[in-house]
Image 1 (tube, helix red, strand yellow):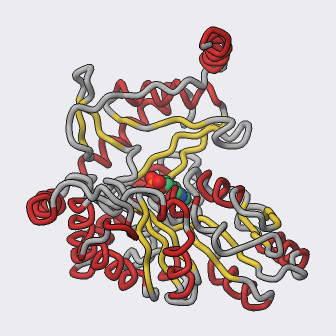
Image 2: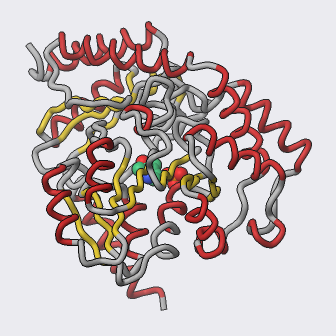
Image 3: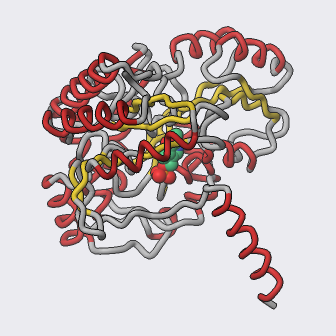
Length: 396
Ligand SMILES: *Cc1c(COP(=O)(O)O)cnc(C)c1O
């Protein structure tokens, strides 16, 4: 009988709307890019995609996806271990391991699945997971699916992490778990210090590089490159859905035995379909591009540095960041929404975030830079921020 729950859902939905938390979707009628068109007819500059390297509509990846369709077909109709593994999947897994300097890789349909299926096959109630308080929802869910004891340390706080490691010393195995770049602030955890603490207190380290891979580090190899500890981190998870082309797909890469065990026991791998050949082939082309040149990283780093410098010069309050995420702090929730819609009217597409997505009174507009942004895009965005910022009294 749908009647009762229908009424209940209608009430809940009305509540979400009243609280101003109802998520509307803007409809884009062009490929994902730095400049896009929405279904209401406006052309806008896009500063809110995870398209960090501007690869979402790159001709080489589009061509590789088409080639994958022609040579390997459309779908796999199987999980990997039954009849869903093609040469393309094995090649892509190897390329990912080469990129990160790891031993082996296992592909998933998404990074959400990689994180969801990571902990339960490796750890039991005898073990301990020590997790950063700002970790992504998929890590939180993955941890929930596992019986290990849970410890939470304050965001990137090494004293608190050390306290939690001490508390967890009686566990059989310990693992420290962190995002590589935190999505709301753009900060990066001190992975070198985490690695030292892991050695001191005999713990494994897992990093989710969803927002950092392709972006952070001189050649975009992620946080292990930034801190010069390539090959030392036990487990890295990541996505093909952000910097790496933005289509779909996730992975876990790291120590050989860990990956091997995941192939045996990880539930999203065992019970969910294989990545489509077109995406696997485009992924291979993408990692080949990464191996050839760091042009896109160079451009992204230049764009990010320029944007942040100009915004600070204009008087905006910018959160310290080490990624391509730039949080323009406004503190007031309503202001963040008014400012985002005024920016949209100026042709700049950005999103204002407020509680509960960020802490109370920490409302902000998040700007995501891309190698796909041209100089004129950046200048137009900065000019719009200055104009609207002055109108709203955010800057003088
Ligand atoms: C986006 C994101 C994910 C999810 O990646 P998908 O491949 O889209 O499922 C996981 N972890 C972090 C830290 C993310 O930012």
